[in-house]
Length: 362
Image (tube, rainbow, N blue to C red; front, side, top):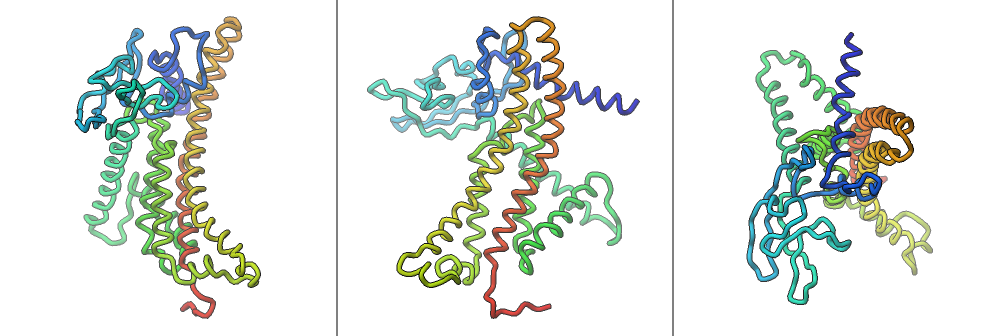
């Protein structure tokens, strides 16, 4: 009976992402035959100025978010995104563009009638999701820390959620941070643990189809870019002299360094390609997962014109495959957080290299 209950809960939990998002009038055309799969996927994985929840009787239900913009004449405007009526209205000269250049962004028109972007500091869906996830994550981790401060016996073992967090921390520190960085691992452990839990927690929230989940935070290249920049700064700010020597004067034959600095140029390019790889890897994998789920959802509506039997069969297959991919996404959520943390630790470890004449203490 327990297995049946788990299967039933899973279907009821994940199926709404199939049926609810498919009836979203904000992102879908009115005619199902005219369904643009590419447009649908891009709209769902992109950012927005409101947080769409569901659609009831053809009317979208969403949470409006604050819009903060500075117009071209220097005036600041603060108002609710509900003024745009889901992208179909204009307010104080501002509106959401449907043109390719600024599609989905707030724009205004200049004196020549051209669309221009104002200074936009609005709280978007991804920004709100970032604040929510960060707040919840801080509360969870601090509650675990509070347990260790309050425990009476030093050998007392945690249970439940706290035990799981301890297991994850011990696994990351012992299997990733310490082997990759070496003797100075404690200096970088707080950052690497923060990165791991931040990515892992946001990956999990992105799988949940209902508020406050469903936002594509780690599938947003701006988020992954900032994370990669943090790693880039740490690697190059705390790199040893030997690390910089290997970049600008590597131990290779002289003709590879003089008169044309071939190897230094390659090593210098590698300094920037490493964080770029971090950024693209996380962004592409998470974005692909969301795109696959939405693509499977669209199968229901793309097969309507093929007949009832074909449509029913493909609908069942779509729901089953969507649930399967969601379970795969649970594994991917951990793997991507683990890989980003591991690669960051490897890059930091490479920057801590010492000269061959330095003897390490046993």
